[in-house]
Length: 245
Image (cartoon, rainbow, N blue to C red; front, top):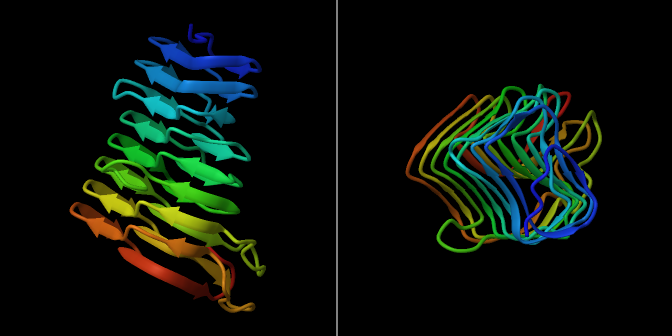
């Protein structure tokens, strides 16, 4: 039977965590193990919270009737965990200030890719970010690694695979060792910096070195709309005058 309590912290083992037809304030935090059913959000609204999935084998799946408003955090934060099954979002994700819609970091293996057909809004952060000590990121099926057919509105980058320095330091790494499945956009991306960015930024004082993405496979394709203040699509890296963005 699936675990159905929400919000809160789960510490046991279950086949699935189901959040269905409810409105609440709080976060979904997994400190246990969730099996092949994953975390499923159906017709639910989080008024102030996020999802911290921990160890999940069946991914995160959010339907078109669901909304998650993370007032002070990233909406979906996959960090320091084993993650399988991918992320699919058809709902509305609203990130807190200077936070991301979805980010993946310090994960040895992430399988299943990220697919957005809904709305991801991050007013001062990235829409979807895969960076900072990610080992293997692998997509599956026709969606590939990261696929967007919805709307991503971001203050920084719409979709970024790579790293970003803080202050005048270097990007810690390797940021992403292997990324498979490519990036596909058939929706709308609007970004304050880059629309789709594979690479990374450092401050001008340290120059651009061998970091960010060691192996990127699957290519980048755009059949939608990208509006960005800097570049629509960029592969490589940029050196910034002063602080990294």
